[in-house]
Image (cartoon, rainbow, N blue to C red; front, top):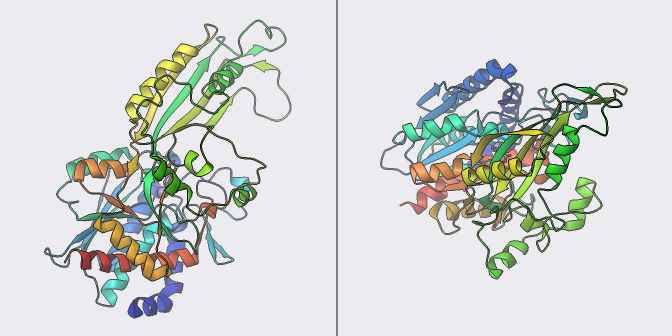
Length: 456
Ligand code: BES
Ligand code: MN
Ligand code: MN
C-alpha cells in the first residue's frame, strides 16, 4: 500500500532510534537484580502505546513482572485484533562473547545488535509502530488490543492467571504474535507449530561435605560423575529418549505431512557451516527439520558442581546440579511428562547418592490451521509485502501462552514473526535486521487490513 510505504520510508530513522531506546533497558526477567529495569521497560511500552495513539493503557503489577495492556477501540462493530508479545529478554551471558555490550545497541551491516533486538522487543515495537502509522494515515480498519508481558522467558506464569481473570477485556477475533522466525528474507514463512516445554532442576548429593579427592577418591561416589551418567542414560544410541512412557502421547504424522514438512527449503551443509559443526545428530529415522519440530527432545541447559576457579583443586564435590528442559509435541502434556521424568530420574539414581528433582514451568505444544481467517490474512499480507506466498512451517521453540490463549479465550493465534535463525536469539550478539524490522511494520499493517476485509 502506497501510504504505508511512504510513511515507513519517511519515519524509518525515528522508528529505529525509538527501538534503540527500548533496547537500552536491561529487562532480564530471570534475574531479580533487574526488577527495577523490568518496571522501566513496562513503563516504556506504556508510553510508546500512548504516543502511538492508544486510548487506554494500563500496567498491572503481578507477583513477578508487570503486564501491560493497551487498546485502541475505533468502533465496537469492527473486528478486534489482540497483539501479544514480551518485553522481557534472556540473560545476556556469557558477556565476554559479545562484540558490543548487550544493552548498548549498535547498528552494523544493516542489523541492530542488542539483547532483545529480535526476541522480542524489536518485534513487539513493530506492532506499536504499525498502530501509530495506521492512525496517522487515517487507515486503521479494526480495533487493536495489546498484551505485552514480562515473563515469557520464564514461563508466563503471571500472565496465565491474568488471562483467566480478564477474558472479557481480552476478547478478540484473532491473536497476532510476532515472536517467531521466517525461513529467509527471500523465503517468507509463517509458523503453524510450536513445541511445548517442561523444565526441571536437579540436585545430586553425595558425601555430606566436599572431600579430598585423593584421600577418598575411588571409594565414594562423585555426584558430578553420577549426574553425568544419569543424564547420558536419558537417550539410547539411536537418540531415543529412554524415559518410560515418554512417547506415549506423541502424535505420529502421516507420510504426506512429513513429506510436506521436509519440502521446505533447507540446506544441511549451510546449516552445519553456520553453526561451525562437522555433523548433526539426533533421533534415528528423522531429518534435521523433523528433529527440531515434530519430535520431542531432552536438552541439558546447564550443569555445574565442583571447583570452577583458576588452577586445580583436588576435590570430590558434595553436590552437583543441572537444569534440563524437554521440548514437547502434540499431544504430550507438560504435567504428565514432568511426573514421568521425576519418577524415572529418581528410580535410576544409585544408592550412593540422593537426588532431588524440582519440577519447573511448562507449556503445551501448539498446532495451528492454515485455513483460519487469521492465517489467510497473514498469508495475503506477506504475499503483498514480500512479493511471495509464505510457506507454513513448524518451529521447535515454545511460546507457553499460545495454548493457554486457545483454552481460555478460544482464539487461535497467528504467528507472524520476522526473525531469522541466524539472529542469535538467546545467544551472544543477538541482532535483528533493519529490513526485517521495517518489513514487519509494513506486514502487520497489511495484516490489519486483510483481516478486517476478510471479516466483512
Ligand atoms: N520467541 C521465542 C520462541 C521462538 C523462537 C519460537 C523462535 C519460534 C522460533 C520465545 O521467546 C522463547 O524463547 N521461548 C522460550 C520459552 C520458555 C523459556 C518457557 C523457549 O522456547 O525456550
Ligand atoms: Mn520470544
Ligand atoms: Mn526467547
